[in-house]
Image (cartoon, rainbow, N blue to C red; front, side, top):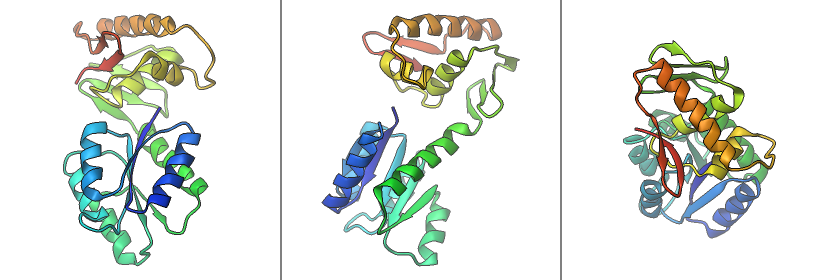
Length: 220
């Protein structure tokens, strides 16, 4: 489940967007100001941020600057100001997409999905790991990993967020896109096989860690 942070000073927009995104299966965190949004970003570590440009106090442009100084998390800027200068400034700051007010919740959900898909489809690298989702290729320490589709999905999910702990339920959703009902111990079996393949390809380092009582994470 992807976690989305929405930062907007308009309560009605926060409510509608949160409701629409939750209905589509996302975990949603909201913040009513730029200051509150930055605090939530640090605490919650979202997978994507929606931020309104025009807010009192710390505006969306400054929020984007501060997030970009420490993270490459995808950012969608929400604005009623359609002047080209705002769009260019947003691009210079590293925003990934725009939504212009007024908008439909369906449009926002579609843009969130598209940005997350682009972010996940690019080749992802962490330490000696390389993943190319488009070509269904993965290598560790320069050696090709022969992974099953389920193992590939698990590794991609964990490596995309180094250090983040995923529960077995979250990993099962990543393993099976049809959300079939299986034992949560199936995750343990696939993790065991994945660890063995990583160890065989590399120097024996254990990069997928168990977190007692919670789940698994990709070691930073």
